Image (tube, rainbow over all chains, first blue to last red; front, top):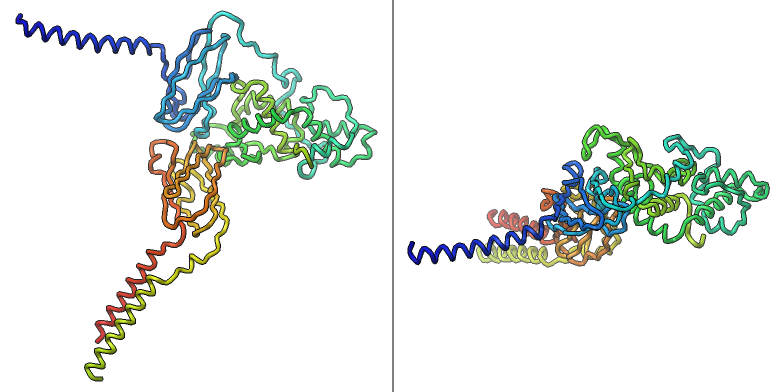
Length: 329
Length: 152
């Protein structure tokens, strides 16, 4: 072996070693990064859609949007949502304090099947699982969510009754059970049944109902509900709650589905501005439909996504389509 | 008619054609005299088109563009005016501007919305296309003048 060959070998070996070492270090540093691709639900949704994690161990994710704008968030956690723009991968790190089954979901509307874009993170480890605060209210009250609830028992109000005018009326309020278990129409009838309320006409009693409804919520909850409504509900139920969102025509004619594909049972989204449909329904029923989903109507189940406070804030906001909560009439 | 008188009337004729041409080029256009109005224009964006795809306004109008996304997140960037809107399904985006620059401008989707995203293009026309109509007038005039010139 000549000295030249030896020199070439040493030089080549050093170069290969330097390259290999840096590649190995890079691979070692990134071996626990999980790459998740987000696509429209029709094209596969999240891949992978099931992750495993351990309590206290950071879960490192690299999120990539493959087709359109998506968002990433973990349900029932107050971590900020991550916007995913195509061509701009985002790396993030999640650390869970409690074991349990967490849902991650898309936060930006990416077609009619947007809400189907969900995945699951199974977190194992010591500690008590995040226990639910008991069964939801509709279960506690034993309500059948799908029974028809006409508001015809009470004469419907004209326009939106003003809560501020109702507050000034000094209406005699009878003892009510669970306030969120009663429909506005039932409360109206209870008010009408009071002998002391005989001097008030029907419209004034509706204003009193509006006032009772407003007194169960706070401006902060309404603002939160408005934000959640715009981001999650308005695409189908309409920006003004009239059931005329951009996806409503397609939901109303499931046979002509172009975005979701045939075979999906859907119906026209509920109009929250319709008093006949809304005033016979209690907040507990609305809450139940929200967290359980519509079962064959196209309404997603939001239970794994919203915290209890968020779900109730959203329900509180829905009543502003019926009642005028403005401070001055 | 004597040859001298003939050539004089011919020169007069050409002068008249020239005057007409200058009139066509320089005459103030009635569109500029129109009073500005407030306009609300609703543009629906879906993959991969705008509806309506062409929008026309008059010079000086206060234009409110409403962008409604009907499937995924779409954007709208208006060339020339350098304005950008982004709308999510269920959240209409609005933007008001004064159309003070005449001409024809492209608007393009500014948020990646799928494979044909680069072809999601619309057009905004501000004012009448003055240049086109004046050019058309000149061409018509030239054709008439040519016929007139050949007649003798």
